[in-house]
Image (cartoon, rainbow, N blue to C red; front, side):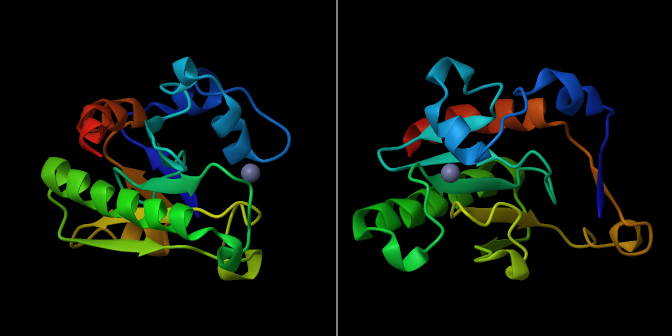
Length: 165
Ligand SMILES: [Zn+2]
């Protein structure tokens, strides 16, 4: 499926974002200095996990909560890290509710590439707000998804609210 941003900010993806990295992109974000958080779309850094906007969102404000540690096995996630993963997920849902007023959410982890994980080797929780009609003919017939807000705007709307997490 193709993702298109409106208004046309594909230049953000092509040139303005983080430089391409080899290896795990989530580890690269983890290890980047905090002053790179804006260009890396990092909304919040907790003790064990961070929240970041998805570079290829299914909907506006599609973000992810990710443990810092590189791990693909949910069973190996320490309880304190798992707790923070869910606490931060819950907080993010509240923030998106307050700012975007969606009609519902999909929350989930794709464990393994066969399950649809784009980055299977590093656990991450997707938080996708949903609105009626967001799965209309464009993504189904046209295999093109329209995102009516660019990532920079989304980041600006959400970043400050995470100080309450
Ligand atoms: Zn990693």
